[in-house]
Image 1: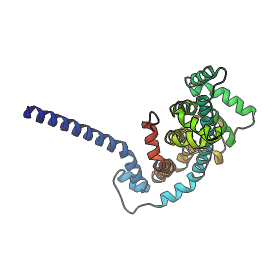
Image 2: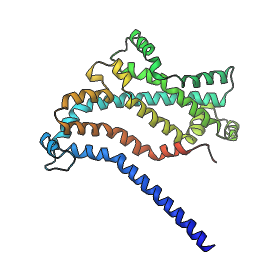
Image 3: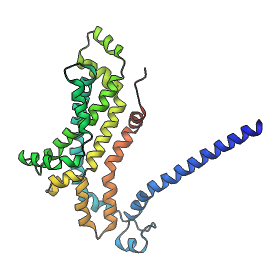
Image 4: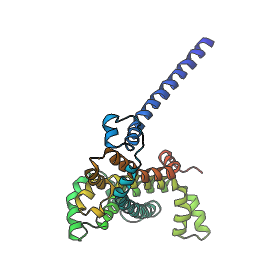
Length: 281
C-alpha cells in the first residue's frame, strides 16, 4: 500500500513537473519575439546587419526619439477612437442588457434572439453597406466615420453578456431596494453595475483591443495621414523607417505601451471577469 501511494505521488509530481516545464517553454517562446524586438530597437543599421539578435553598444536611444515623433499622432488617434467607442458601447450595451434582464415587454425574447443572430454574421459581409452609409453621411476621413460603426457593431456582445450576468443577480436584492424606495436607475448604478464590474471591465478591455487592432475598416474609410489610427498608421510608419530597422522596432514597441498599460491596470478585473460564471453572495 505504501509503495502504491508513493508511486501515485511520484506520477502526480512528474505530471506537474511536465506541465510546468511545458508552460515555461511556451511562455519563453511567447515573449521571445518581444525580447528580440527590444534588442533590435537599440541598434543602428550597421549593428543590425552584423549582430541582429545580439546586444550591442552603444545603445541607439535616438531610435526611440525618431519613432516617438512619427507614431505619437497615430497613438493619439487610436486612444481617441478606441476610448470613445468603448465608453458608448459599454453604456448602451449595459443599459440594454439591464432592460432585457429586468423588464418584460412584447417580443422581448424575439428581439434578443435577433441580436444574437447578428453575432453570426461576419463583419466583412457588412463592409460595403457600412461604407455606403458612411459616405452618404459625409463621414469619410472623419473620426465619426470610424467611431459610429464601432459603437453600433460592438454592442451585441455586451448586451448578450450583461443580460446573462444581470439575470444571475438574486432578485431579492432588487425587491429589497424597491421596498426602500429605490428607483430603477438607482438599482442599476448601485446594485447591478457594482456586482458586475469584473465582467464589465472584461468587456471594456476586449472592446478596446478589438478596435485598436482593427485594420480593415480604418483602411477603407481613412485616407488622411493625420487621422490614421495606429493599426494603419504603422504601415505608413514602416514606409518612412524601412531603412532604419531599429527605429521601426522602437515604434512597434511604443505603439504597444497603451494596451499594456490598460491590461496592467485592469488585469485583476479582467481575470475575474473571464473566470466568473455567476454572482455569489
